[in-house]
Length: 233
Ligand code: BTN
Image 1 (spheres, rainbow, N blue to C red):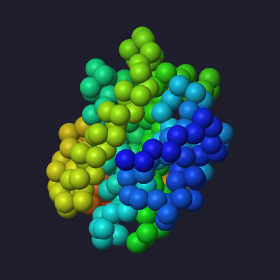
Image 2: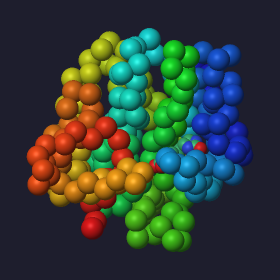
Image 3: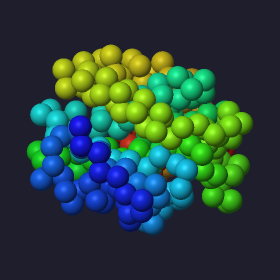
Image 4: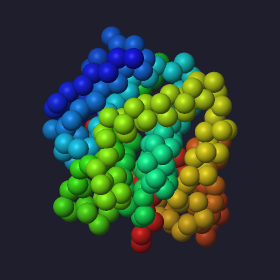
């Protein structure tokens, strides 16, 4: 498989988008550090050396309605990788991985329908979270009390991504969703969903076949397709 490694790049997702049409599916772009790492919703993503900042170019032949499930592939692969290192992580729907109430990883998918999807993963490994986020973010090193081999983490993650992506390509969405539910840290909890201007409070009771979060609210059941979940309010 082709791995394009940078010491420094603006954003592995941005670079992957530029080359996506010319590269084969599965090509990985990885950087020691990013100067303009991107998070969801136009946020910046701190990406100093020591972390794992990577993007995979995917060209799935799947109906567009299934593409939103690719973000779960990233989160599931990260959780499996963390478990292998003894870190009991869970998924904060839809695209964060958390440990002990703090975020350790974010997943950002971008793409052009019918052409490609970029699956971007940012995992705090041996780096510190930025000062202002210390209470909300953690890293593998902080959890384990020692450094871990970034290349071991990288290769384990690639293997796990291959595993979940194969299920996706085979249309085994039910297995993906049930794994997502098993590893979810939001199910059963009172949550607040923030999406643009709207806020919704309720109890997260299920994730349906499409990957939507089902909330029980005072006004009845609501199906949420995207948004930021807040567990602290
Ligand atoms: C989020 O939680 O908001 C998603 C963060 C995604 C960060 C990764 S790091 C590798 C890839 N390149 C980027 O610029 N962003 C993603």
